[in-house]
Length: 195
Ligand code: GTP
Ligand code: MN
Ligand code: MN
Ligand code: MN
Ligand code: MN
Ligand code: MN
Image (cartoon, rainbow, N blue to C red; front, side):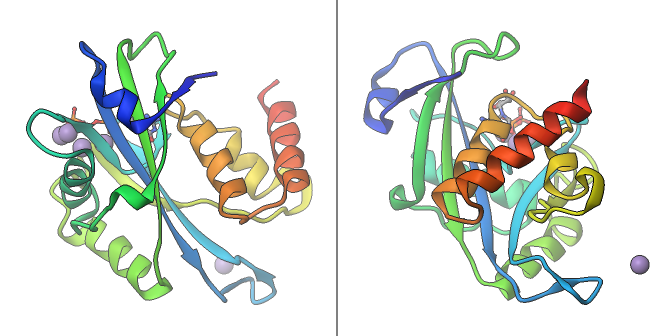
């Protein structure tokens, strides 16, 4: 588990790098196979290293605010400089991942409309400079449960960068996109698949 600190505390720490990532999400009335409501669109990305993660990246607080840096990364990675405010900040963590020591991960959540999210998916392919390079493509998180672990359990059984899997789980709960019980069920089923 990564240690939670406040945004203010994070900015006073010396010798740390800062990474800001965001969950862009919204409601949808679309139905899978014409019958299973997808309920929400939640965007993640397939990274260049084959891991799933959120859009965003390294920010230099000495040169830009965390939120301006995150907007800049969004412009590079999804082709739209989505405005991000301090109000969208959800958590800051001291990363415990051995692969990224002395890193503070800041996480943001922003709710958008379905047309806005679809425009981001389009721009991520057509105008984002990182498309096909640092970002292999945006993906939507399946939030439903199909037979034999299909949907969210299989999604959670993939490999995620740093603490992005924990960020996803806490965000789904925070935004009430899933109940605690549904989340526990998905995590349990995903755990069985990884064995
Ligand atoms: P470059 O500027 O090209 O180096 O990439 P970037 O700025 O886009 O950086 P990246 O998105 O890879 O994030 C920087 C570091 O943050 C990574 O090395 C990971 O350790 C970590 N990281 C990446 N994505 C996520 C994420 O979704 N959540 C969390 N918590 N950490 C992430
Ligand atoms: Mn089909
Ligand atoms: Mn980037
Ligand atoms: Mn990035
Ligand atoms: Mn970067
Ligand atoms: Mn880059």
